[in-house]
Length: 125
Image (cartoon, rainbow, N blue to C red; front, top):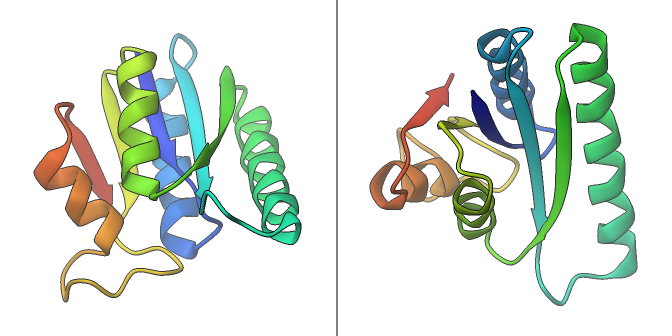
């Protein structure tokens, strides 16, 4: 099973990463995506790299095979692109991220994925 996880370091994305790790088990593969704006400052790129290292350390701790993608642009689009390119079985995201304010129930990224992704999406609270 291939799982794509959106990760921005928020509490909700940490829970999504942990859920993906448990779903992947020994035979799965988790692909972590962290996206920043296309015209991001170099400091944002450093933050993104740090987030991916944090996610990698968590997955190493659980013994889950994984890879990471430094996405650019809107997070939902970067996550969907990764899911398409890697033939993901499931997209896993937190219900709210660092910038989620578009909806009362779901963050803008999770909302976009639930309503626009051609893959199954698990939203973790």
